[in-house]
Length: 152
Image (cartoon, rainbow, N blue to C red):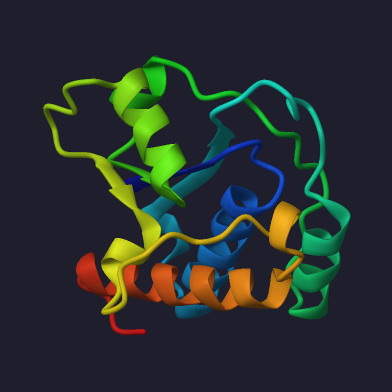
């Protein structure tokens, strides 16, 4: 089983979007039993909060349910528990390197590094570009699955 942890600033926009999009993809591909997917925040400000309403609405329009979600903070045991810890932007990557300075098992990645256009995924909390964020997340998840040997 491949265990994937998506990480962003507060874990109410990009990382839960990534979690639920990837879960939806593996469900539809019939390979869900091969994965455990979760997400976490680098900061404490949104802990316990649900998926941000515009993200929840966008995902619902795609048939993806986020009910029951509550943001949590990343912790040291996550490094042992997960095979991939995937940030969204340079700030997340810096914070992840501070949290897990050595990354001896090469687990830390940026989501769009799995695509042919590596770059940050802008935080839609600030940009209000939820559709753009969704497209970036979808492309990153497809790239991740391709890296893992699955056809998307």
